[in-house]
Amino acid sequence: MEITVAAVQLWSTPERTPDENRQHAIEMAANAAESKPDLIVMPEAVAMLCRPDGRPEFSYRDVCEAIPGTTSEQICRIARDFHTNIVVGLVEDRGPSHPCQNTAVVIDRSGSIVGRYNKLHEPEVCRLEQDAGVGLDVPVFQLDFGTIGIMICWDLVSVELPALLAYKGAELICFPHLIGLPSSANFAIQLRARAIDAGVPIVAAGMRDNSTHTGFQDGICPTCIVDAEGRVVTQTDLSAADTIIAKLELSPDSPNARLARRRRTDLRHDVYSREYARLFERHQSNS
Image 1 (cartoon, rainbow, N blue to C red):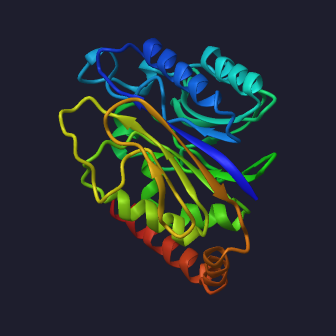
Image 2: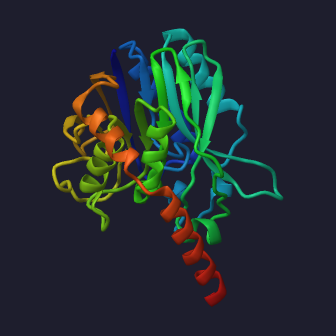
């Protein structure tokens, strides 16, 4: 099945307040929706982007919000008015006694929230210093054109997560993030590898940051669409807020999808789970 997908790149600047970042994201979502794609992917934590108000230190508490709430309701209205599906990254306020949750909200063409994915992997600094919680599940979401999975930013370090999403039937992976480039991690190789290993396309939506660099890393910019073979279908540059649009074929019978399924049948999850458990116990006893 062929679908049209859009990935939105936001402009990040520390001069903006969280509310101004939210308004920027809403406006960009509306602009992307005018092309009537089947799916729009927005970046991670759209109220945050970089450090709001120019503060050198901040926490998720500074940008968290209710879900459903003002931002999600406006994005839901755009989805309904333009009859499109939208994935948007927000930081959820779960109350003063609970950590904030970096989450991606999935909205269908009727403007209804059909579910959310809570970021599974948070860097230690976010968990310890920014009051960030972590997810406990690996859901997939059924939309009218097929099944999607979601990874958020630091989730890219996990080789297990995209494999699990593919196992659970994901035909496409959405990747909201705020990774600035150039970065110390090899974004290009990791992103391509995750698509190849899962055997499904990845739609990555990031930001144009406020730094002075103009280069990009290994031929991939933050906002891009990669097919199931790990090839770049289209991408933005680093110059501005932007939207990219591409057509993708969601085919469970593509050569790479078949190869990925064959590889998965040979995996030794019985051994992996046992070894991970041993390593975790050893780590806990030494800490």
